[in-house]
Image (cartoon, rainbow, N blue to C red; front, side, top):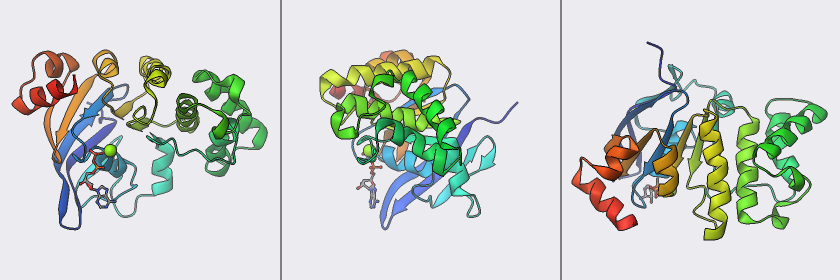
Length: 244
Ligand code: ADP
Ligand code: MG
């Protein structure tokens, strides 16, 4: 059997005295779309940040394609070429156009020349339906468009895994749909995605598995039908009923 694409093995993380992740373990295969749900403060963002080493774990290990990425000697820049991240608040550079934001990593991290980077940049803007906004600056874009640029920027690095941290929760409700639609397309294309989101429509239709994290522990992990129709843990049912 081949290695899973991503494996978290008994991951612990604390900030000072505060235990934030307490023995988190799960695996994802290539092409999986796992959606992480859970109350505010339960450790969802921290878990994602551990995967691309934006923060360091205190115990356990994380593997990408069978390779431990939480070793001290792992090349973090190499890791981040393979693991893209889409942030809640977009994190775009205000002084760069949409195209500039998408091509920056190609040029600076991958060392691709300007013309080739732009060609790829246009392709990824097209993939998120924003070819016509290539020359717009973030201030000229709606929140939904900004987030689609954020997704195009992550895609441009051709990552093995895309992390999404509440990608639609900073958006006005009428702008959520266009971002979810792009994410649905990516899921259908077989891109491996680990998504923190409370967009239950997306979770129901696109997720391979749902992971319910509460107080730093995985309370329940299973296919959407299980969590939504027949939750095995009382806490899962309670959490989901409060969302609806
Ligand atoms: P979630 O994304 O599920 O809302 P977080 O992972 O952001 O949860 O936070 C989990 C806990 O870790 C919270 O209690 C939060 O205050 C704490 N925390 C997160 N980041 C930091 C940090 N950089 N320093 C100290 N505590 C943090
Ligand atoms: Mg969070």
